[in-house]
Length: 439
Image (cartoon, rainbow, N blue to C red; front, side, top):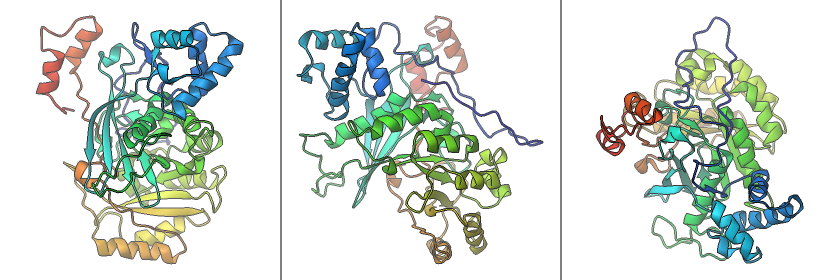
């Protein structure tokens, strides 16, 4: 796993306090597993899967064929046991089972909305001493629709940024997710939905009796800022879109960013994914408040990066996300300025009714105001759909994700890092119970 690739560029003379959060831990580069524990092969990129075979003594020439076999079993058939791999020799299957697992992230909980949206709280395997043998937790969301099934995945545990309207932004940044951990979210969803060959898809979560919709689209709009974990995001997109594996079209994979300008071109060149911009304001002074990253990369710089995005054309438009905040960014003048800003950029504007969360100081714009805003944008020639809020009743809607991963206080963490068990102060389990959700 790459360490956090935080950009150090600064706008001259500006105060950047409160823009980004430093990670609570800086994990060691790509640990295969906690010493003494077997690591999982699920979600690994092709090259990493081959490395795991070489590590157990499979020869260089044979490893190419064997990695192809494993790749098919993992990413086409969804195998959960090495014994299912009937075209792999029994001796090699036993060797692999002794060294590795096919474990998925643990599903700690599943919530199902009235509209069929599902939210999973997933616990990753521990990746080092900083996890205190309790893997980090993230959330991902499955959104069924009439013609697609969209999976919203997370790229970080917590979030780098401090956007004032976003619930996820109030959570500490713990660490980046590895490419395998990102891809494994898709594997978990396919398991839950029966989305593998030979399986009967689950029934619609709303209880209607309809056949469950399968995953057709991926959006990197869960926890985290994807472009601050770009290496792992690029590798995850490659694994998800491999035509001999999970086989999602790159045109159905969208990566959303709050505007990490220096990484936008690289995303297009290396991931070839669709781009979404979390915009939300048309004036720097307001966007500085809503999306503090704007103080580093103001709107003019962001628009230049969008115009230069590799592969941009009318068939590969950029999606601009605009959350509708009552009395903040929803005037007719804001709509007209949005049209002016996007002139010449093949674009679609997603208008997002604000999804409330506990403690937020914002309100959603009135429906009549949203419709008027949409009408102005549409009349200027841009698609401006109003995103139907999904999963609000389970805090699964846009901007609401926030895993309740409990954290040890500094004193207990220091004791654990020093080799103690913190029992003299309070047990880890007792601390979690006493300080559930404490920030």
